[in-house]
Image 1: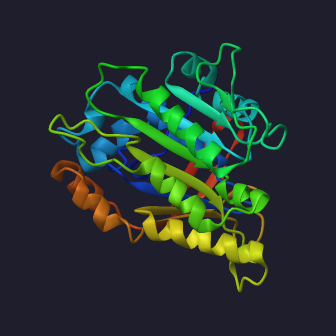
Image 2: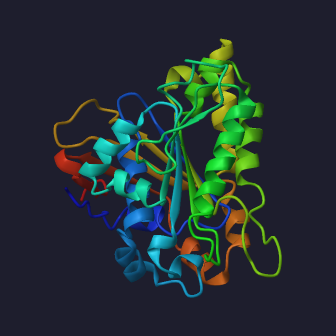
Length: 316
């Protein structure tokens, strides 16, 4: 199994997410976000890339992430890719999703395979050795919301002695869910807020409710965003705009403006967004100084075989 090292240019942006932060990852058909989401997951589960970031920005003191890395847990909801995809692609990046799922560190919710198969039975929980592996079989908004909240509680309960909540919520393909079900962007954004709420101190013990941070991947293809006319285009534009307004960091993946190149997969632009100021104010001073040191930047990248990844600045 390949163990993918996180490129130093990327590492500072995908580790140590701020408490209550929302990171928006966007892509298009010719430049998808799979490789970037997998790097987020690798850092969360395998402690990859943290050494490079600590050298560049200084190791934070007293932050929740200073504890053992196996305290970090993941809830992954995907509407566009099934369990087999994440399992297979994860191996190429060094992530053994089966092992992490059995140990309770990964709770996967399949929003693709069975979403419209049977609305008359409750959401199912797989019993084939994948701890916490669930499948949505009803697109109803209330069912989706309650299933994710239940998965978050399941994740947190895997370690009842844990002093802090270190559960990360990954959401993939919510734009597809809106298009396929006719839910409004406001309804879905309210649902996301429900999953994220309660992130402030619940009491004097500093135990946080729900999730520590959220990473959302969505499509931003030009036909869906430029001069929206149809209801689908209008809804998609409103949804992405709402997420961008709440996000602290936006990471946008696109192809080359000049076309296809054999040794360049595309361009990634990383920029602080309107939610950045609020997020850093909510964080501890030690991690705030580290976060403020991050700069907006645009990088070229190449995704090779067996999980290989290179990033470099233009002209380098």
